[in-house]
Amino acid sequence: MKRINSINILILFVVLMSVTGCKKFLEEKVYTQYDPVAFLKDKSGVDALLTGAYARSRIVAYDSRNYTYIMNEFTTDIAFETGGGLERDAAPYIQFNWTPTDGFLNNHWNKMYAAIASANTVLGVVDGLSGLPQETIDGVKGEARFIRAVSYYFLFTIFGTTPIIELPANAGPDEIEAIGKSTPRAGLEEFVQYLETDLNFAAANLPVAENPIGRATRGAALGALTKLYLHQKNWDKVIETSQRLMDLNYYSLWPSYETLFSVAEENNKEYIYRAPCIAQSGFHNNYMPHAFPPNYPILTNWVNFGAQFRTYTAFYKSFQATDKRRKLIISSYTDNSGVLRELVEDANGTALNNARSFKYVPDPAAVGEANGNDIVYIRYADILMSRAEALNEKNGVNQESVDLLNQVRDRAGVEPISLADFGSTEALRDFILAERGREFFSEGLRREDLIRHGKFIAGARSRGYNAQAHQVLFPIPQQQIDANPNLEQNFGY
Image 1 (cartoon, rainbow, N blue to C red):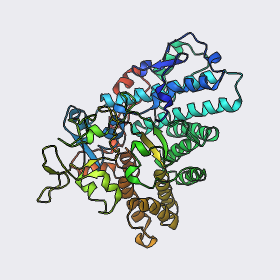
Image 2: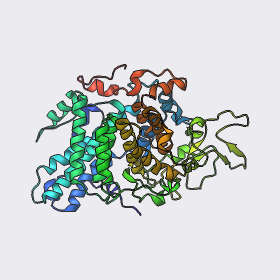
Image 3: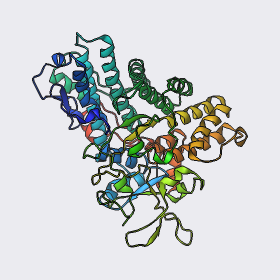
Image 4: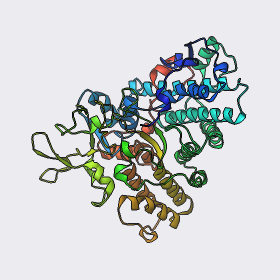
């Protein structure tokens, strides 16, 4: 059984943060009178100090459903949702008519700032420590700064830049509240540099091996840094940082795509940064109960939700018939009544838009909705394909980009591409975007990819929605605007 540091929530010593909106996201709540400095004399105390920060940063369960699928996949050409009570909440995202008062956006803001506040607490305590080796202190700081940086990144992809919260030493409650209620959004250059500095520090001070699962590593920091540079189209830095990660000689593609996302095979070296999950409420992956089609023959310990995550027929048909990745998308099934149900097209060839991604292979030991499949944020295939994209943008069509893409395609069981297949940078760029869709469906990367390639809004319009150019960003939640008069709303909202 995997060991998950974030589940042992015995935070008996640390000053934790309670989140009820921007107004209170830095409000202190003391759970104990233990002296945290005294408690941090050994490694177990260090691990315990980081527990709260890790726990708050995990995007799992319904937070993952909302961020990964509703925000980042149902707004794209891969999937959408119908049915159940969720349909009302998902519809604005599918139809591009979301508003600043949407609760999912506010919850995401609060969650990420809770993680940031907790990471800042760790850093504040560690700065006052003595009696521990400097290497240990720098390692703790590296983990906290990694948590802080990725939490800001998860805000950045949704809202653009947000306030960077820095607290003076020994700040009192009134000062903390005032900072939270008055800090404006950072400028783009300042924001990116802040994340870059945190992630470089983490990369310099974290171990290569992930022990226990879910712990920040050098590779996770370099992977997040690569994704940050990709987001900014800083091609030189993508090339440089991806090479640093590859030179660790620690990661590799898992040979079987069909089992990569199963519980049985999640101790692989393709996962670079993940949220560890177990079949326990609050620490789980609940994707599959949304993906099972109606009356699907499930195990007695599983559950099938009325909310249905559906895959577009056009996306399903973009795969070659031999592509192993397509095998994780269910095109038909025999239901509990013995009736064969087609999900891709009807007898007349009309698209049903009802295929189902079973990428997160159902956990045999699931408890109701709670599956134990770890949720992956960054994996090695993403680094290879990000590097291929950056090399194409920097140098034009080139052999290394083709070779990197062929590593991923070979695992999928499809024929290799060649340099001669692409007559221009634009042609290879379009191929990379399509190939990223086939490789990373159901992982919440599609929206960011389409935005980077300038096809997010046009794609929504082609699906019949009145998408506007400013909707490449979501609005800052209205509750946060109301609490902080210096918080400027995104253009168009």
